[in-house]
Length: 368
Image 1 (cartoon, rainbow, N blue to C red):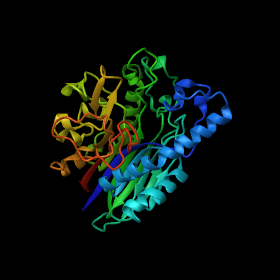
Image 2: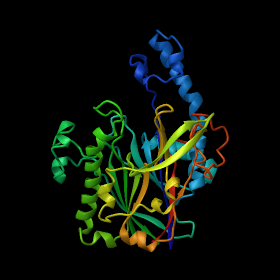
Image 3: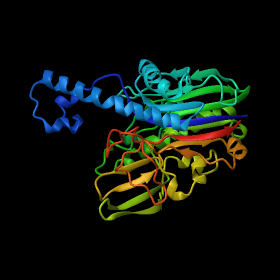
Image 4: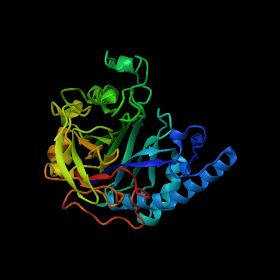
């Protein structure tokens, strides 16, 4: 029996307006910077109009990306709350897939912006096997001290009793047609807001490494370090780090060039170095594993994988020939695709926005 599992950072599925840009210009949307607005009341009216006007297109495209993934179980990141999830599923997903995702799970986590991880599930797989939730646990309250993970490298940013997960590690025990599957849904610390100048990836790396070690410890404590490899588990989510990237040079006018580069260090080495878990996206060609396009102007551009479905060794071996799909139809036109990878974009996709998300869904058919 099989189940189709996906992960998707849906990017700011939020039901609140953020008016902090009135005082903090760094938080002001770029279109609002075109206007001289000196009244807070007028700014709030304009910001509400801007958000409402852009949201409908964005969420139609998000729903199209999810419909193309066509998963039985969908792990989401950047969801505001359960009302936002219900409103999106009823108003957008229902129009794409009908009565698909009747089971919805979200636990409020630690993110300062209030964005959480969530899971949507069908009641049965496409093959008619029941999908049952046995148990669900949040690990948001765990601290470095709880898991004995505090290091000298972390001391510059964190304290021993700070929470390890910047959002959560949502743990779900499922049965698919009676067979067990445990999911760990995460959204690791962003590479932004580093305390060092330039790229914040290096300065924030210790935090993501601690999150990865925490996920691994939770799994090994649960199943036993010597038995975890034989269990059915998957670690899904936006891990905000990569072990390789495709460096992009050139421009739209002159043409783009692409070069594969392997990173010396990644927080995800915690999972891969000794075979604790397997990244099945590596079964795709090395130039075709990316789920996000990052750019800071033409001098700094790359494609990389931030979105993962890590499989236990047993689950990976049982699905040794299965290659995950990456849904890229919701990417904006500014994203440069390596030769041979171009796809048909969804209707009304823009140069930079609207888009389905800055991330691409990853989906895989798993034999359980």
